[in-house]
Amino acid sequence: MRVGIGYDIHRFIDDKPLMLGGIEIPHIKGLSGHSDGDSLLHAICDAILGAAGMDDIGHQFPDNDDRYAGIASSELLKMVADKINKKGFKVDYVDSVIILEEPKIAPFKDAMKQEIAKILGIGKENVNVKATTQEGVGALGRGEAIAAYAVASLEK
Ligand SMILES: [Zn+2]
Image 1: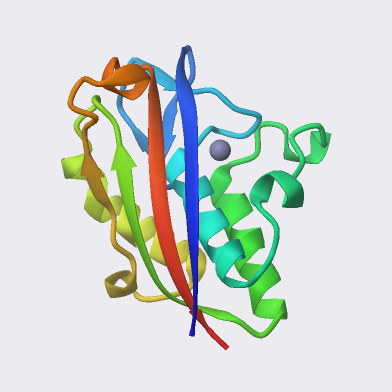
Image 2: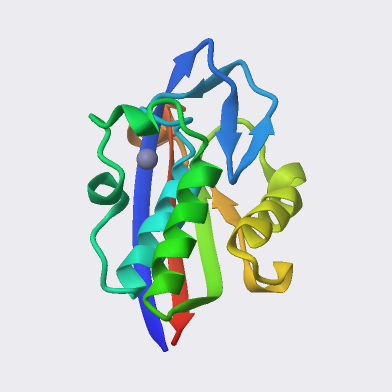
């Protein structure tokens, strides 16, 4: 069994849909980035890549490569799963925590778990999504961005 960790953060910008955990969440702002800015899926990508002993998503999918401009992060996660499958690994379990002040995402956690499990081709019981606030401290506390941590275990 192998374990990897991932972290990501994207700042809020206007006039963009908010994509988090592979689903669209109703909000007045979205997340910046070359892709859709889904910091949770990016953290999960890095956790899975880390467990497989591979380099991070910035290395796998460079943001100066036009093939990835505006790409859905669900596509990136699918490509990550394909990459590690080719190396003989299978995702066993994913745990994660989203750090944000707003919007409230409790009503959407279940849909996120479902979507992440679907992308990875594993059971929903093998994906966990938790959330916390930054208690008003710093840039995250001012609601300027959404960050996420993820841990993934793989089996060969
Ligand atoms: Zn990212």
